Every structure is written in C-alpha cells, then in structure tokens.
Length: 450
Image (cartoon, rainbow, N blue to C red; front, top):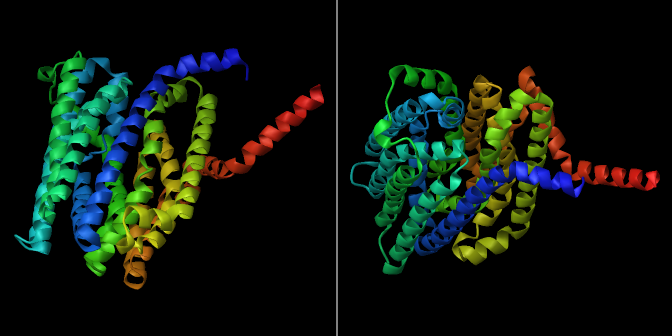
C-alpha cells in the first residue's frame, strides 16, 4: 500500500478514529479508576463482604435490563437517518427508558423484600444501589453524541462522574466505613453522570431539551422494532450477571467474592470491542447500502481484529493469573486465580459478539438476536445449575465460557441467513495463521517479480 493511499485512508477515517480515541480513552481511564477502587474495596472488605456487595450490584445490573428497551442501535440509526424527527426521537426514547428503569427498580424492591427480608444488609445494599436506575434514562444523550460522532462530550461527563465516585469509594475505605455505604457509590455515579450529560447536551446541541416531545406513534414504532433486541438484552444480562447471583444461592458470599474478583479482571477488557465497533457503526451502515462487497470486506477485517485482540487478552491473563490475583487482591483471594484462567477465554466470543450485534441491526436480523441471546441465557442457567453445586466458582466460570460460545458463535451455524457470519468468525479464528501466510506469499511474489 502506497504512502499516498495510506494518507487518504487516514483522512477519510480521521473523524471516526478520533471518536474511537475519545471513547477508548474514557473506557481506559474509567476502567483504571474503577479497577483501582475495586481492588482497594475488595482488599478492605475481604471475600465474604465483597461477595455480598457484588451479589447486590449484580442484581441491580440484571434488573437494569428493564430500561434497555432495545433502543440503543435503533435510536442512533434513526437520529442519523431522520433529521426532522430528532426532537421526537429523543423525547420518546428518554420517556420509554425512564419508564423501563422505574419498572426495574420497583421489581427489584419486590425481590429484595421477598427474598432477602426487609432491613437486612443485602436488602439495604440492593435498595441503595438499585436507586441508581432512576437516573440512567439520561444515557439517551450518549446516543445523540454517538450518532454524530461527538463522543468527547459524553466522555467528559462520564469520566468526571467516574472520577468523583471513585474518589468517594476510596474515601470510604480510608475512613473504615461499613459495608452498606459502598452501595451509595453507584448511586452517586449515576446522579453525577445524569447531571453532567444534561449539561453537555445543553452546551453543545442545537435541539433544546424543551423541544423534546413524546409521541405515541413513535413510541409504538420504536418498541415494535426494538422488542426483539429488548428481550435479547435481558437474556444477555442474565448470562453476564446471573452467575454471581446463582453462586450466592447455591454456595455462600465468600465464593461470590472469589468469583467477582476474577470476573472483574476478566471483564475489564470488554470495553475495547464496544468502543471500536460503536465508532465505526455509522460507517458500516453507509457501506451496507453503498457497496455490499466493501461492507463484507470491512466486516471480515473487523472480526479478524476483534478475535486477535480477544486472543491476546486471553493468553496474557492466563499466564499472569496467579501473580495478578496475589498482587492485587492478596492471599485471601487465591482461589480466584483458577476462576480467572477459565473465565478470561470468554473474551474471544465477547469481542466478536460486538461486531455481530451491529451486523444484526444492519441486516435487520433482530429475531436471531433474540434466539442467540436466549440460547446463551438458557445454557448459562442450566450449566450454572449443574456445575456450581459441584465445582463452585470454577463451575460458574465454565458455564460463562460455554454459554458465550453457544450464543455468539455455535448458534450461527444453524441458521441459513447467519451462516455467512459463522464462516466469517471461523475465518477470523484462523487470522493468526492467515495473515503471516498472506504476508509471506506477497513477499515471495514481490521477489519473484523482481
């Protein structure tokens, strides 16, 4: 590839690359801040109390799925394609998400009352942490900034909120605070993020908040298109977070703490594919209609890159697991190393799933999203049910790895329309062999031409 062509390609993609840098910077800094605070909190609380906190926050994540509404990709798409309807899109989406989050919180309260008992430590942690759901409807503003490749504004808001809430958690450790206070950090983060996102939107958007309008027909249309993704997102959260809840049901809080420490390290990398794919999503939308051949070529390159990234993460974490656990969490969490070695290999499927999710939206294969996520959730529930009582935390890690492979790869082979993506993913898994062979072949041809 000539220098001129490289320069032209860079300038053509510069806007998207800059957006990726902002998003990646947010996730890197945010993950770093959160990771430092989480390690300090885990070391301070110990496996049992940390497991209780992790269990409560996992429940909050599961019930937060009620506010997802399947609208993220749809709203970004509609904001790009429908300039005249943007005030209705924003107003309707924010109302739907608030209704969903409120429903999730009320249901969470019912669960906490019935299962944990009013006034227990677990009840208080769930209620305080769950209140953060009421402020998450504000992330519709992030959809706006994503649609117009202006991630820096949402990054500034989110990082500021993250830094302040992280400082709060560290302060709690230094003050020797009791367990229940640590749930307030999540609530504080959500409040700060909502306020700062609204401020950034007001300063940088041409559509004022007062112009947002709720429209019933728009709501019905969004829900009609998004309900499949909505159910799929619920299934996705189930097989992402239900492991810690089921560990608490079948074992004890200490086992949850060991597992949560390993999962924190394993999942710390999951932001990478989301950032990369989110920034290139608008470009993929355009290519899908302009040039199907180029679209599939770029998608293959994306799968290749995501697989290689996931593989590097999995190998590195496998080799470093015992040393990392001991260094970061201390000898009390030594059992987490075995869990981490298993859990980290799920990254391969998580990374490629990020591109698959966007392909599903672009190709309007939404029913398949529901099927794959449903299969993953069912597989995870069944595997956890059988493996946790026998193997504890490592059994939950195997359930996570196997269910991710079912949902994000194996299931693609059984449906004609998605089989092409199955083969693209399979080809991506050969990338460590394909690229060196391709390079060697081109080098040989170049020498032959001379």
